[in-house]
Amino acid sequence: MDFAFFLIQLLNGLQYGLLLFLVASGLTLIFGIMGIINLAHGSFYMLGAYLAWSLASLTGSLAAAIALGIPLTVLFGMALEWLLVRRLYDRDHLFQVLLTYGLILVFEEIRSILWGDDMHGVPVPALLNASIPLTDNLSYPVYRLFISGVCLLLAYGLYLLIKKTRLGMMIRAGASNRDMVQSLGINIKFIYTLVFAVGVALAGFAGMINAPLSSVFPNMGGHVLIICFVVVVIGGIGSVKGAMAASLMIGLADTFGQVLVPEMAGMIVYLLMAVVLIWRPAGLFGRA
Amino acid sequence: MTASRRSLALFLVASLLLALFPGVGGTFYVQLLTNVMILAIFAMSLDLLIGYTGLVSFGHAAYFGLAGYVLALLGPQYEAASLWWSLPAAMGVCALFALLTGLLVLRTKGIFFIMVTLAFAQMLFFVFHDTKLGGGSDGIYIYNKPTLLIGDFALANLDNIAHFYYLVLLLMLCVYLLLRRILGSTFGRALVGIKVNEHRMQALGFPVFRYKLASYVLAGALGGLAGYLAAVQFGFVNPEILSWHKSGQVIVMVILGGMGTLYGPVLGAFAFVLLQEAFSNQAWIGEWAKHWQLGMGVFIVLVAMYLPQGLAGLLQRFGRKAEAKEEREEQP
Image (cartoon, rainbow over all chains, first blue to last red; front, side):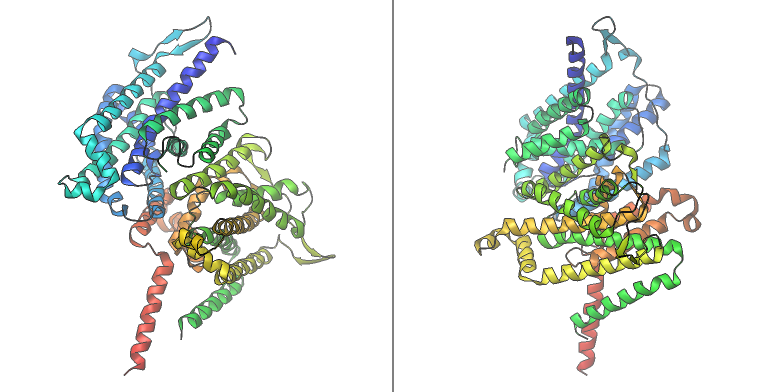
């Protein structure tokens, strides 16, 4: 493996990892703060991608599609929390699994009814449609670098939001003691709705921004969902920092796995998870 | 009638109805019901974990699929395998897999347990999906159904739809009675105790970890029984039978029926498959039949919201009403 090839795989791995982080951070926030296991999280990723595809073909621009799509996903997340999720806070995890498993089926069919069952490509925006030449015959697409950059920015923004703002303080307080925060006069119900909506929007945004690379196709959320659960568990449930570390780990392991040991590639991430959990049963950054 | 007499009567009536069914049902429905009963065995084996031991496994499809692959890979390619060794082999491999993974996964709790069981099932999925071992993503055919011979005499011909139906029915009833018996024993009571309060059971001197492991292995072996029968019925295995969707489905069956009741998951399997048939029946709902998952999904959501005790909970509510009525009639 020469250096340029290695560099490409490294960048691909990082880009994949950062994208996973967007989806997984929503998942880990929803679980860590609200205590909800959300199997439908992959569906939000899929809905985001389809939204990007249909809005981009309507408006002719991916940027416009994303600008329109984000408010839609936020509203969608708020409605979902308000209608369904809120009723299951006090219940056993099992019922959350059941509810969100049902939602996967519903969203998959809504996708089929609205957009059909075909695979669609989404063009890379013209401005970013270029490649950086590395050697004579190897080059790296700018759009992938762009995605990595956006994901890093968002990750930093998320960090600031949670650690440095008043809202972030309320969110963290709500995670450790909901009733206490409520009795201090903070509208914890609204904060929960907000956290859920932010989680949905992050997954949806990941689907939108990645649509030109992955294309959009039925059941595209399933794989992302399971991998993101692995990320969340390795990182430690509820830990955004852990989600970042684990996303990068999984992104690199998966990318290099597919190059070096293609027959084992599917297994590697799960093997990694099993090893981490035997070593640290609450994940890398989890509090046991 | 007392509650236990009533449930015995219900059990006998249900068994009798199922036994009579091939006499009236057409081929399609006999096969459908065979499939339902196989899934009922699968769901009961998971109920032992979820409903009685308090272990929410999200990787139970691993055993279902593994047993099918054992039959497909160990059996001779162009001849029939004998059920006498292939069934114990399939269940044995599943029990062994459960023992080895159980030693690891049972160290974790709650959401971590859910995810680690999923992880092991996914690993198995990719072993069969990505390597040539089991025909990759295309799977393998099982050309000949296993034989069930004593000497030269065939006890049952598994190619015969009715014979296979009765074999599955018999096995389902055996599994039910076996689990009932186990759950009524000290061991079974201890499992429920572990579900309610693990530390207290530990303090009382029960070997909690070993009990959980035993339950996990037994559930794995019985899940393997269901998977073996399914592979025999369809004559085909592919990685889909190991997928997390399958694990999700069986959880739905257990909760839909009512966890921790044993007969609930059987009801759940019936309701799940029959509803799926109804929602995808073109004659009944026309164009929308191809979107059958929508109806299924909405139904599952409603169960999660409004029916936490499942169908068994509904039945018990009726049972209690009937009892109250009898009592009223006894005291004029």
